[in-house]
Amino acid sequence: MENLYIIKIGGNVIDNSENLHYFLKDFSSLQGPRILIHGGGKMATQLSHTMGINPNMVDGRRITDAETLRVVTMVYAGLINKNIVAQLQAAGSNAIGLSGADANLIKASKRPVKDIDYGLVGDLDDSSVNIATMEALLNEGLTPVFSAITHDGTGQLLNTNADTIASAIAQAMAKRYSVRLVYCFEKKGVLQDVNDDESVIREISATQFPTLQAEGVIAGGMLPKLQNAFGAIENGVTEVYIGRSDELPLLSEGSFGTRLFAK
Amino acid sequence: MENLYIIKIGGNVIDNSENLHYFLKDFSSLQGPRILIHGGGKMATQLSHTMGINPNMVDGRRITDAETLRVVTMVYAGLINKNIVAQLQAAGSNAIGLSGADANLIKASKRPVKDIDYGLVGDLDDSSVNIATMEALLNEGLTPVFSAITHDGTGQLLNTNADTIASAIAQAMAKRYSVRLVYCFEKKGVLQDVNDDESVIREISATQFPTLQAEGVIAGGMLPKLQNAFGAIENGVTEVYIGRSDELPLLSEGSFGTRLFAK
Image (cartoon, rainbow over all chains, first blue to last red; front, side, top):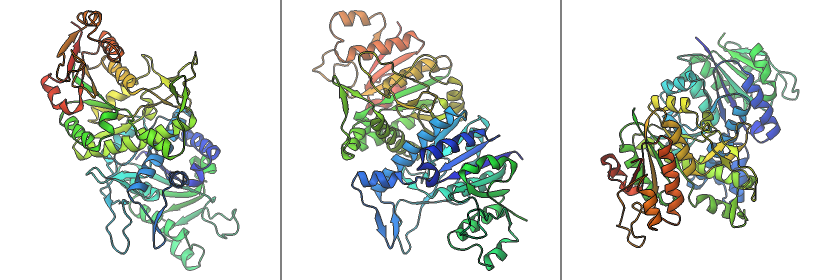
């Protein structure tokens, strides 16, 4: 099967125009088909603040009310998405900026209300991603660039976690491609010692993962990240990489960040 | 050649959610391939106001400075575009929301500074529209929905007149399709008597146009609209229609608004 890179960037790349610029150049230098998913960073919070909208918090959780959805639709799907696309075009990638509503590429369902009503937030399942249309866009030589906005098919846009979108696209596209899923975050990879930024663990297999967990090496926020990553691998994704955006050129030689694989 | 509808809506449709809802249902009921272009309406002005940004006016002309471009990119390409797409998806149209930067579909050039520097405004020429990619999207069964944002190919987004985008797409696509270009505005069509909203002139040919102009029937803001329309017809567009959005169902029987044609 053909290789497909699915790369997710978050606030640490988006909020710094220089970081973003260099990342997009490196992203454009990758060979073969690829998909980019971007989060929102601080811009949505800043715009809300400027507009006098206070974040709606319930039990410490951020709620996507109608006003917040308007803001994230403007910032994620408008401002950030179109600026990334224009920069990728300049760098030679034929990027096409998309939300999940566009071409019905990602259909979500509003998160059911249990203890907390998260508001207009979308959850994905294994039929959410429109594989055929995604493949048609890739075959057209296009590079899809997704903002973290989806829809429910009845006209409602939904705010959706960008990590979740990346993982859902990766698992769906694994049916047609050999998928490398790449999460860019603020560290160079999974660290052996959280206080030593250079102590990157180069590889973790699904069989090693429980041991590292038991030893307490992988803990805190890293734990759900890796659980999700190994979940994606179980569902057909070839490899997951976790590392820092400015090291992306190392990806093609397989030495970017931490590589997670089945065994 | 296959028929292609290219339909432009402006503020009078977009600013009223009920008008927009019914228009999008009617638009979805049209048969065959079609492209929608939307303006921005009052929302960008409202957001600027909320954000404390004053419109930058020079000699009574609105200037697109960097801050204004940020606002229109958020509102046109984000909020309005994605809401239209989600509603069209709900109504059964496989819409894909786009700016000119996406898939390099519309490449503009920054308007040269003569008497006035309009700022980050894009002008189009007859090589601006990427016909091959547009056709590929249509062949995929997709309905492109364009916001009035383009790019210059070097990473700069540009604010671009939606009427101009509609006309440029129509002229470019006329090389492959029999194009019906439709402008929705606040009147039922070109009026014989500006004070009588029912006095719609049903048809105007390119040969009749100079006579109506000499008689003073067509004057004021209608004059440049019709000059542009007949310009598009000269460049291969089959017909141009001008009328009110709520009469769109009449389009398929050819009795929508005023029909402009070659002879």
